[in-house]
Length: 369
Image (tube, rainbow, N blue to C red):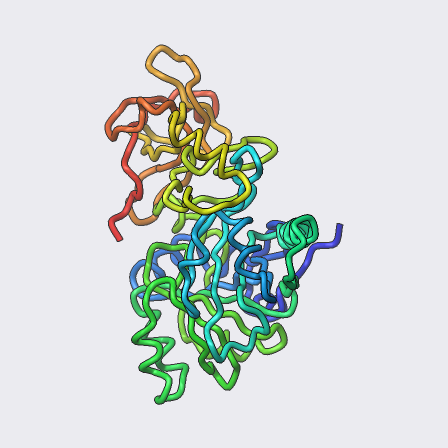
């Protein structure tokens, strides 16, 4: 299968980026160094190309009903320009994907009421899911996969707001300053119509920008900050305990529901959605395992798939994500463990390259942001 390429691929090549396949896309994983890019975001700012993320527009008279029935959060609570984090679940409550749903603001160039962002490589699957359920339920709604019509960039870090202020006209700066978390606004960046949202995947303040595919280079060039690849994006999100599709949940290889994954706050049981009955039961009965944070006490770096054992050597879980934290300078990770291990400070052991390494559970997120 041919890998998809983002519109800025040639720009990244010229900058000397190293690339990796991710979700069917050939994406920059590193420009200078993962640690340096990570530190830039924590201390000042960095810019990411996240055009591998999907973009699906939903419109028409029944758009809200369709979105409400296919996502776990309360879409009806969104005013124009607001966004929310939500899960997309199957009938049994298994997470199929996590997403951000936007109720598009007035003045947006998008010809729809809603825009939602599936994970990389999931856009076709989710578009088909929306169309199939729309037709099954007889709803009057339009569903359009616009993933390859728009690029998505992310400017993240303490200096992100100032960088965006410098990139827009003076009469739009109040819009930037007044833009709150999970709010979206249309602005013009470097002469390009842009949908900005105060969202991100790093734990820092920042903005994600959705721009026309063939004008992405002008917007990218408007920001004088460290270019960052998916490597730093991963270490940043692990420090915050944020989920990664295919690692921290996988409907085929490691099915999890939102309560196990620590995102039960996205589930609104007073709405009707696919998987609601199963999740209502899971909420009432509780779950046996939950996603926990841990840090290694011994030397070593935890990686996806490593076994977690108790003091007797019995396997109690498996690492889903792990890294050497550039901020903490400690090896940290995420793992699904029995709920009795949820409290911070419980001793566990991680098998790293065949050796048992002592670790302790830790509250999430690892950083206070």
